[in-house]
Every structure is written in C-alpha cells, then in structure tokens.
Image: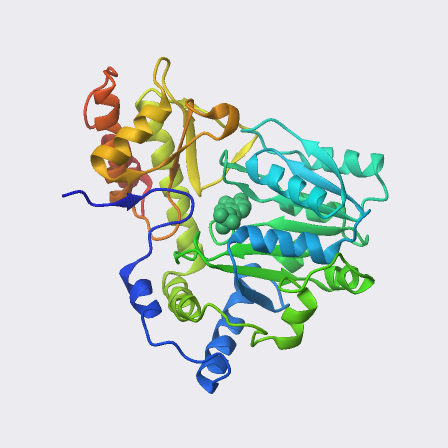
Length: 381
Ligand SMILES: *Cc1c(COP(=O)(O)O)cnc(C)c1O
C-alpha cells in the first residue's frame, strides 16, 4: 500500500471536506442557487485580496489569468517592464511577447528577490512603459518579491502594476488597494486548497482605465465581459469548483487568515531547519526574502536531487518538486501550502530521509523529523 501525498506548490492536497463539497449535484448557471453561490463567493473573496473591487472567478488554470491581464491591460506595441527572477517571471515575459508588447526585463538571478530600486531604475530608463508585470511568490525558486514597494513606486502614475499572486495570496499579506496594485491574480489550487481549474482576477480603477483605453484582442478572457456579467458568468462556470470554493472560503474563515499565515511561516521554518540538518544548503540568503509556500534548498554535495525525487515518489508515493532549468538535479522544493500541518511535513521528510539513506548519504535517521518536532515544540502554536 502506498499512500499518495502531494508536497508540491500547486496542485496541493485537497481536504476531503472540499472534495465532498465539489461532489454535489450540478446547479445550472442561470439558476437562483447559482446566483446565491456567486454572491457568497463574490463577497468573501475581495477582503482576501485587500480590495473593495470585485474579484472575478474564471474557469482556467492560473496561467489563463496571467494571460487575461496581459491581453486586456495593454495593446500591441506597448512597452512593459517584466520583473524576472524565475520561471514564472519568464512566463510573463513570453506572454508579453506573444501579445506583441515590448518587454523590458528587470532581471535578477534565480533564488534572489528583485529589488524595487531596480524596477524604479528600469522605469527611468523606459519612461513610456505602461505596465509592470511581477510575480509575488516566485514558486520556481521560493523567492518573494516586494510587490508592496513596487506598487508604491507607481502610485499616482498611470503605470498598471500586474501581480501574479497565484501562490503568494493568503500565505503572505497582500493589500491590493492599500499597496497600489492594479491587477492581482490568484488560482484555486494553491492556498485555497482546491483542485486546479479556477482563476481569480481583481482589477483596480486604474487598470480599468487602461482596459477602456483599449487592450489587445480577447474574447473568453475579456475583462469587459467579466464585468458585464458579474457576479454571473457569460459562459459555463466550473460549477463543482465554485461549490468547493464556497466551502474553502468557510474553512479560511474558521481558521482565520492570520492563523493560516502563521501556520505557513512555522512550516517554512521547520522545513528549512530540517533541510539544513540533513546537509542541504540554503538557496535563498538574506536580504532576499523567502516565500512560505515552498522551502527550497540545494542538495548535499554529490547527491542528485532528481534521484531523490524519483525515489520519494516511486517508493513512498510522495511528490515533491526539484529545480527547473539550470537548477535541475541540484534543487529540491518542498511544497507546504494549503491544508498542511507539521505532521504532514514529518511524513514528507520521512520519505526524503529514506531516499537519502538509499543514496548512501551519511546521516542519522530521524534527523529531519527531529528538527520539525523541535521547531514546533519550541515555537509552534
Ligand atoms: C502555480 C503558479 C502559476 C500558474 O500555474 P498554472 O499551472 O497555470 O495554474 C503561475 N504563477 C505562479 C507563481 C504559480 O505558483
């Protein structure tokens, strides 16, 4: 028997309570039941984004929401700044090019946060840039970008700040209106603990002005259509996921967002300590900020992280992710987002310890579990 465990930064494990909520009979999307559901979801989402604007839900993966933002806020030929310190930043840049925008990259190495000052400098160099595309929690490396400081730079200008908060929302504070962010994107299969398939988009007044000025061509992704039909939708919504979302919002309300965040911070500290005690090396060094969505570390000398992942999954049913691109074989990324507690983390690290022992790594069994238990005992709640 192998119990399957997902310790990935999305999709995450889905609590049974949410699976069951999604297993109800389908309600029709023009019914009063659906209207009620949309109203409930529509009133619970905006506070989580820190906005008074509506938050639109669409049937899509997170990438669809990123694409919708690029398509609606900018027109072909527009210049944008793209903050890039990982794979998802690169995805934003690729999208910008696909839509005929000129993307000026504000780059910093994978495993670092991009300083807001670098964004300010890029804007001085390209003053006609109409937007900034930035990832909050860069899931490919575990680095957090200071979107608050970046939002601050463009307050009172007409530069539209688009934030991919797909993994960062809920896990880290985000106050869209207060921080001057214009489009904030999220998705169901990260902090919301749901299956993939729903994306969320919040749009500020400043972003609406850009949309009304005219973006690129779009239909399914059109912000105008989202607004016109809100809180209903113009085409078939992902009804099962919306039913599960209502329950997820209830779970978040019960735990409280502060406690949710504190839990993730504790998991991040425990995972970091466990990795260090096992002989892994810190990947993100201060002053660069680390996300509490995943904990990434470099494998001990002589150990191929790819081999560890393969053994963890084949022998123990535990899925974690490794490094992308040039970090393949070197990095390990332990996801701990959503419905995860310290005991889940012990199971994941148990599989990692067994895989390490299988590779002949010199270590005391129970090292990681010990680190997690100590961390929780000493500073846990
Ligand atoms: C998960 C994720 C996405 C979206 O990925 P999809 O597979 O399209 O859902 C985008 N950006 C970040 C930072 C993510 O973590």
